[in-house]
Amino acid sequence: MAEFPAVTLLDLKLPKVDGLTVLERIRADERTRQMPVVVLTSSNQEMDIVRSYRLGANSFVRKPVEFEQFMEAVQQLGLSWLLLNEPPPART
Image 1 (cartoon, rainbow, N blue to C red):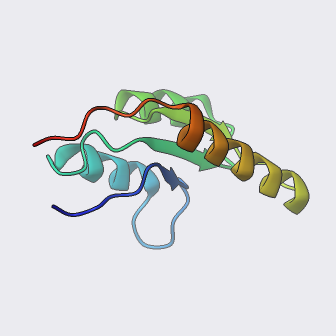
Image 2: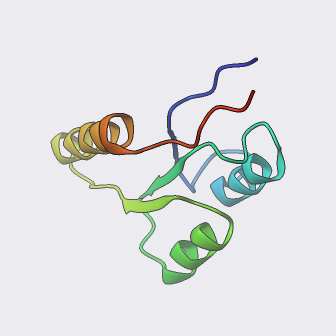
C-alpha cells in the first residue's frame, strides 16, 4: 500500500495547472480522495474559497505575505493537522 502525506498544503496559483484543478484530481482518485488538503494561498477572492470547499478542501488559509508570519502559519497548520486532527481509519 502506498503511503500518502498526513496533509497536503495546496497553493491555488501554480505555474502549469491551477490548484483547483489539482484538488479536483485529488478528489477524483480513489487512492487520494480522503487525504486532507489545506488550500494555502494568497488569494482573497471569495469565489476561490467557495470553489475550494465545493471541490473538497478541508480548510482554506490565506497565507501571510511576510516570511516570518508565513513560516509560523505553516508550523501551526502542521501541528494542528499532525497532532490534533483525527484521520479516517486506514483501509484494509
